[in-house]
Amino acid sequence: MTTLLQVSGLTKRFGGLTAVREAGFTVAAGEVTGLLGPNGSGKTTMMNLISGNLKPDAGTVRLVGKDITGRRPHLIARGGIARTFQLVRVINDMTARENVVAGLAFRDRPLWGQAAANEADRLLERVGLGGRAEAQAAELTYVDQKRLELARALALSPRLLLLDEWLAGLNASELDGGIALIRSLSQEGVTVLMVEHVMSAIRQLCERCVVMNAGAIVAEGETTAVMSDPAVIAAYLGEEDD
Image 1 (cartoon, rainbow, N blue to C red):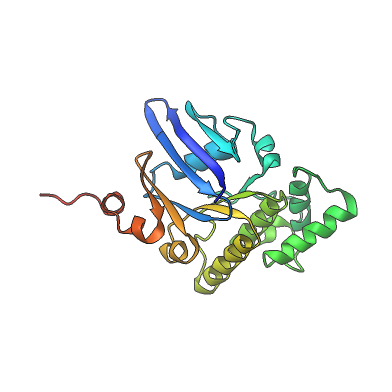
Image 2: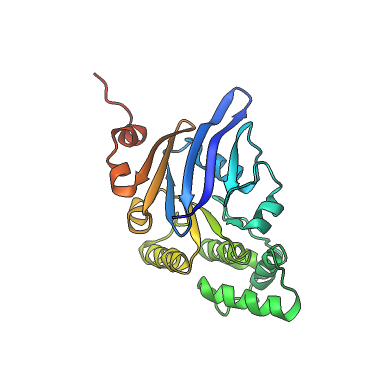
């Protein structure tokens, strides 16, 4: 399979804290890959480094072999990486349609006017917000704001979609729908790297997983094997006392 994303030796320090330490992994085109680890292990920092929200102190990020390390976020987005955030970020004083139209302006081939409005409505329908195009983003429920943020990310026509705990906080029926939506996006050719704590979703969606602990990669590989790795179990549960 073609390597879409290659992370090599990535390091990020905040003062005396090393949040990501010489981390490296790959994501193949068409995969849904889980990025796992306990709270504070460096997962969101990794997402920020890949998407350009942070610049690394060392290491490289390559998309289809092209070095995108430290590039500005809008250039990385235009190059094919879109994301959602752990804390939802929508533009509250704009409608749902306007939020998605804003994303369409930053894709590699921007859309404007009626073409943008039509595409925004299609994407809102795609994520389960059909008929809500005129709703103010601030008036949407938390779950629907997550859907809106995903629609805006999809407006970029991404080759790689970064999902940072997008399934968190969903009830059982919403979770089933969210899993089905991510699976369908993958079947349409979108490569996904997802930070997630919902292990049932990881097992259903992810062919492979990368596991972080204390800023370092401690395991990478096929999901079932990774989840039974002693280093992964120790990361989540802690070492047993002798």
